[in-house]
Image (cartoon, rainbow, N blue to C red; front, side, top):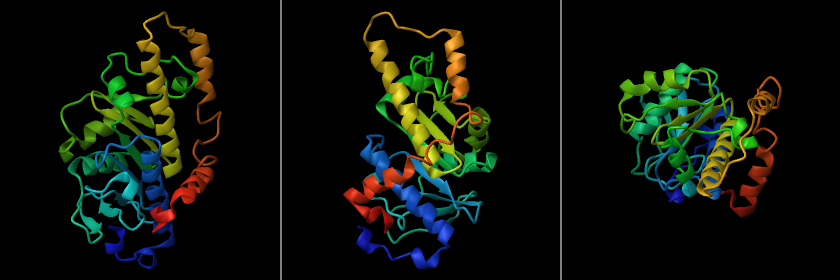
Length: 256
């Protein structure tokens, strides 16, 4: 399929091309780590030298097919500025969720949304994410919740999504799935990786039907404070080069 797409690298800025490569890599990693949902859900990146535009997947390609050139370029108002020569367009929910958050959060450079089984299951629990594990305390107290009102396909819902998120970088979409954002694609991906594992661990622990070893409020506070951005490194930047090497070792076609 990608043989049908005309080369793009020489027609965009170096900054946009780097964002495209990182975002395509993120789609492949999402597929590799079992966080994709066929052609559904979406990951996006703001165009670094054109902050009113963002990159997102064409609605119809599997995550394992995404390449740097295949990504759509869209304005915050929904105009498609670049589309590969393929019969796939912009998903309404993808536009609503991602444009809404980029409009409200100038610091956001990447947004990732998933429908994993673990994420959907925790999103359906009234208790939400519990501080049962070290990984969960990375998000506890700094994760938002947004109530489900149906598929997010109406742009009128954008302001409500942004209000629910606030200044947090992770959100559970009730009865729907998970969402993370970051100042880079690597940061958004690693946040989702951690949130997904925290949800999975919670479900497995609850399924054991035995007494849980819950943490004291003092331990929870100490652990969550260690994950505060003022006290720790930005996750993703250290991990990303090794993840890119992993992808290159399998197939570097995401760079096309």
